[in-house]
Length: 335
Image 1: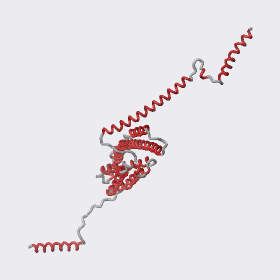
Image 2 (image 1 turned 90 degrees about the vertical axis):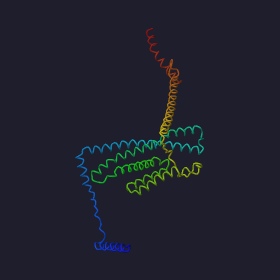
Image 3 (image 1 turned 30 degrees about the vertical axis):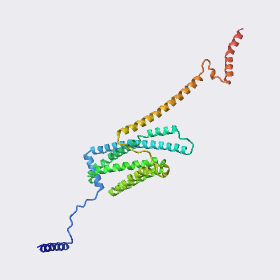
Image 4 (image 1 turned 135 degrees about the vertical axis):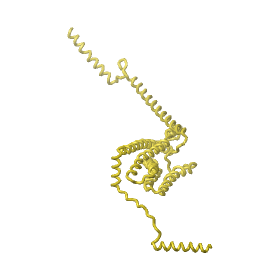
């Protein structure tokens, strides 16, 4: 019985193979070939849609305006935070160099100054990271109208929101790392080159849209950045003198998830800035009072004897004599 079933199956297979050979192979299912994209037709469709929906252009302009405003705010905030960090780092490097060369001694005043600078820079990570998040929102607002435009011109836009979200996130990182390179290039040359590699590799690989290349960039950018700025420097905490020259830092970039520490960081910076301004105001007030005191001492009182010098006294006496001469002559003539 089993042999007969096998024989029947074998005959059926041979018959199927013969039929396929006779017809030239297996049948290929028909596939709908998509039409080629026509730019002129797309523009025409967009114009017609705009004529039928006058509010469409206004909506696009609104998103672009909102995105531009948020981007400008985030960009200015990011530049302020990082440029201030660079200026503080340059001052600290200069003082350390003077101390190492023996031109200055490391005393209590320097330690106090370092503490004040650390308090001033406490909110820096929150400002910079917050600015990057605002950049992400700005890019998302700028790219969002593309979804509606792709739908109108007839291109597939199903994963549009996902593409915009991912693209805006990566674009904000690439832009931030590029400006980190520009800002830190004069103070931390090697660290700035790391930022440049992260930015340029992202700008080259991300537009391809290839998931494998995106994964490669993520590994290079985040993995390489973590290794250079966090993992490898930790190996030299006990012996900082053995740290290579090319291994540089750009300050503390740790962001806490505890909102109380956020307020503490900004409070420290506010107190440090207020104390510095108060000290400057007291110094200016003291200088003003000293100048007022000198001016009061030199003000002519009861004849202003302190304004007279040895050269001015004969001239004043001559003027007084000239003033008395006409009165004496007139009286003599009358006699």
